[in-house]
Image (cartoon, rainbow, N blue to C red; front, side, top):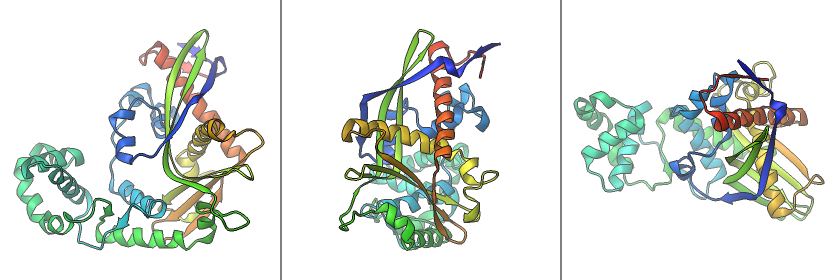
Length: 343
């Protein structure tokens, strides 16, 4: 089996391609940007995360209630001008509640009730192969919630009663944590707000060179929060994380979430894209300072804390994402069925 050396590759950012777009998650994750590589997609090419070329080509679709809860917490903290938390409304738990939400979505877009149920069941993987026999169950168990929530504004977030409490308490704790709010909404010496951006999508291209071959890869990222202090030349990246483990464990090298979920790679990947974009738009260079902060909140006891990302963590994450991009580049050049060993 052939050995491929990472040192034989070179990644060249195309600075002119870097751009920012204010788009919804629905558009960001749509087919329009399906051929762009995100940090999360690199998970599926990473052998240390059970990744493989086939997983990268056909990544699984993840849509769990815990992810939805985390998304709600993010939206209420980072985009309060858009999203609000609906009152408790006895929303069914798990897939039934998600299915009713999808039924409402399709009904609002002119679909019949039957077609809405069929499409919603497929979207949520809820009794897909038995749907005709389960329609009565869906209507019976979800009708009260449907009638109450169908008139809610599209940007009102609905949760089952248990998750509602968790979401409300997590958001309240984060917003009362001055260490966190001071980096989310920084001000200068005269108390004027410093430029802040939430949930912006960044896009850029890189060219990867390998032994006389070249391939262009398209990258995308959606950073939680970033601030640009042009006067003092400081660029800051803040990322909000939820965890069910004790907050003090989050950054532990052995078993913390920061290590387990390869968050150093995420921060380094976002840093690379932010720096490239800011080179183009703000004249960013090595004289600037770059800061990275993890804003973690515990979904069990609602404790929140700010952790700083240090230089070695950024460097480790940079090595990782660059090696993964080099893997992708090789397979793009020579085919995803090529069996090689990377070193």
